[in-house]
Image (cartoon, rainbow, N blue to C red; front, top):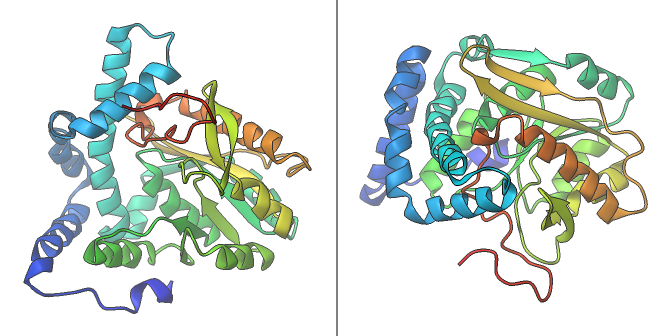
Length: 304
């Protein structure tokens, strides 16, 4: 973690708006949970109206991934997705500044024995998840129960990058930038637990096409390469929010006979697991990502 926090963030006038955002996040994290949820609830409709470009991307993704839904249900899913995005703000605030025991008490863990079985095998464990709106809560709890490291995409804003990694340093063993494959390999080779969300499109070179919601999707080859290099176990993990049940972290059994010699088949298998979990709470997936921007040769652009 030290490599992400040693560099002091800027404090000049240009950074003051960012420091104000940091102060607000810190303050929100200290509020009672019910009050925090109440405060962010109006942000969902505001984000829906103001994030025009992201709204178009999310609408396109939902149309293509759920063609069986009538337009009214697709529209309702779109709005529910922005409500979940708003809740993500208070969840990050809790994870980065609230008392850790209070946050842990909000989360129920299912399938803990699956993680224990994978760790007891004496190998590293690659924990695969996807970009759900409450994934920060999942990373928090995984850090608590397994002292896991995480792979992440660095932020462009140096103040927010510093605060994010400072907050995650409370529970993560390390935060590894997505381009530092060598360190990720080292964590797994040393028998550590690595948290990884591979459902982003980083273009040709690092990906191969495998179906996701019936759509050929550029899928990160690291999902196949990391286990091939380190002989680690591959264990799916998913986080969901339910108004009645609260936050539920589900750890599934490690994938059998993974990886194989067929990288594309392995990627398709992982995508099928991710898709099955997304369908259980589709309003909590990050539909605002251009998940399908890279297309096979000859295909028309997916987004306008």
